[in-house]
Amino acid sequence: MAGLVLAAGLLLHPVPAAAATAVPPIGGAVVRGFDPPAQPWLSGHRGVDLLGKVGEPVLAVMAGRVTYSGTLAGRGVVVVSHGSLRTTYLPVTPGVSVGAEVTAGEVIGGLAGGHTCPGGTCLHWGLKRGDEYLDPLSLLGDTALRLLPADAEDQVADIVRYRAAAIAEGGKLPGLLSSPADAEVGSKFGMRLHPIFHEWRLHNGVDLGAKCGSPIRAAAPGRVVRVSYDSASGHRLEIDHGEVGGHHLRTGYLHATGYSVRVGQTVKRGQMVGRVGTTGWSTGCHLHFITWLDGSYTDPERFL
Image (cartoon, rainbow, N blue to C red; front, side, top):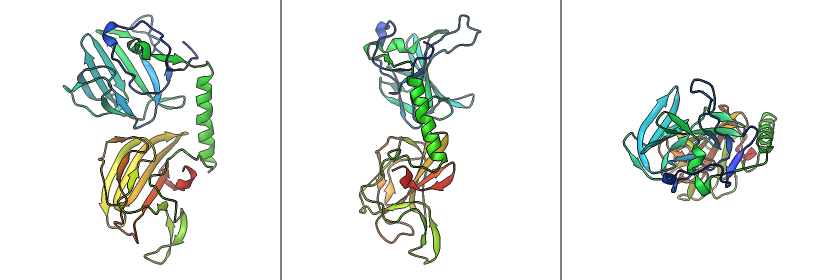
């Protein structure tokens, strides 16, 4: 299995009869497969690592009952019992409570940062029967994961290096983010004469001149870290998207009529999160859209 990356389709292992309705917990490739140690006390890989994005929904692979939902060694963990089998998912932002009954494919949390792998962030997915570790891929039957070419991991790493270089050099990565509103960019990022205070200030984002009441959508998958109101920003939302090319990315959405998401909630790219408004220091209906890299303002048009 060394040197191989896996993605959806080729049956690799015998399937337990009880797993007929199992689904993958996320849709990404298997970056590292199951490699159990020869003896319990030796090192090995007691599960599989699936490539994903921070904030991506993590699904229960089968119906069962949540037996753990919390933090272990600084990482969020969810454990689901399926009779004699248990599946584990980490690192996650848990979205279920202990004792909850879940169905196959039900969202149990969002992928959290902290488990890096070639291509970005991974979910570590485990399977146990009693004290014995089993290969989680054996649950998936005809929907199990396919082998990709042996150089696929190198291809993913090349993409990561390209993104890191482009960001470090101040270059553009068009399409990394989708437009959060159905409108063209009006006022651009940079120094400008403030329309209210009539003095030169940094315009720390871009203005999208969408109609009041039109949808605001998440520009990328992530986790909501702020929903607030203040006299300058009006209704404000911030979403954490984790690492991109080795840099931390966050987006902000200002002046809305309000938001339909809450702090801690995971969102998908394109998911409606609120509606355009003109709250706070605003001269008309628009969305003020901000991007931060490693905590510093950067031009959102680099990524749109």
